[in-house]
Length: 343
Image (cartoon, rainbow, N blue to C red; front, side, top):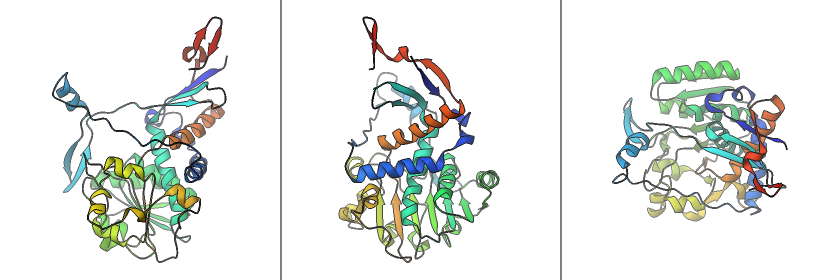
């Protein structure tokens, strides 16, 4: 029996210095191709909200429920605790489990790689300058993934806490060899940039449409729904976008996603103007028309196929580099008589 590779990426130990960024982007590009051709089934993501009125709900609320805070005059969403999400990777031919992985690092990788695939086809070919809003883990992988698809020469980073953006610029400049400059406002980060990435935990919009310039490509990550109506772009930014691409369109309506829901109701954008990344990759909708268009990609939900593609690349690299711990496959099999069967 072969073992099961069990790899924990918590805190980045063991794997963060071996980032298969380009390979993950290639894997997700293939996934986008499958998505656009409807070659796999992608159920919409479901959200379950826990009440706090009975059964220890107050403790649950205290430890798990996010809240709004003010940071340097801006409203942000913070989370009091942490969680463990597990990704289970299976062999599709034998149904044997191959790996159990903590999804902290996988999540930032697949989000960044998806954004980079979109930028590969939506950003201008001569894009050299990135404006980055946010200085957390998502922002880091947005930088490394985008360097795979565009030869960026400068990145301007803004986040409300000066120490955080300065530390980010210092550390990521050293890691990538690219000039990364901390700036004093979101407007300064956006103006004059070719690619604009919002990787924040904001509640209120951080990108104003009046800052956008011809030829820009904009990406937004923050998740907002009918329960937590967070958005990163203001109304004018949505109006000025000549082309809007999203990751998975049905999720917008299921979750009443804040970036679009009320704007659809108010007529700022029409449902038929929202196109999926997979559709664009398969030629079912157009991409960038010229160097003057403003394009917008909303990385609006996590998709199972993204986790599968990213986990597979990380599994292959972990096996190659000897990272992770082996567990007996028998632990995850069903025994019937003297034979073992996969779940």
